Amino acid sequence: MSAEDLEKYETEMELSLYREYKDIVGQFAYVVETERRFYLANSVELVPHNADGEIYFEVRMADAWVWDMYRPARFVKHVRVITFKDVNIEELEKSDLRLPENGPFGG
Image (cartoon, rainbow, N blue to C red; front, top):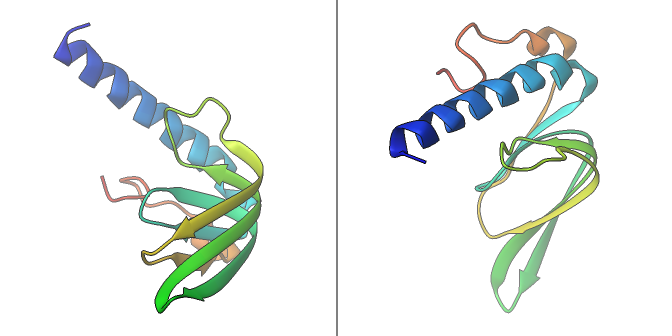
C-alpha cells in the first residue's frame, strides 16, 4: 500500500466517522474531550483523585460513543478513563446539536 493509498483510506475513514457522528449526536447529552479521545455520552461523572500529591482524574461514562476511526465498535456501554491531563465536559442542549458546515472540528 502506497503512502497515497494510505492517506486516501484515512480520509475516507474520517469522512465516514464524521457522517456517523452527525447521524447520532442527537442521541447524547454530553460531549467529553480528553487528551486522547472525543466521546458522546448520556451519563458522565468526573472524579478527582490525589495520590502522593499528584492530581489525576477518573472519568466514568455510560451509554457512550467513541470518536475513533480504527475502532470497529464505537458504541460502548461503560467507559472509564484515567488521565493526568485536562478533561472537558459539556452538556449539550438541543439547540447545540446543529453542526457547523465545516464539521465538528472546523475542518
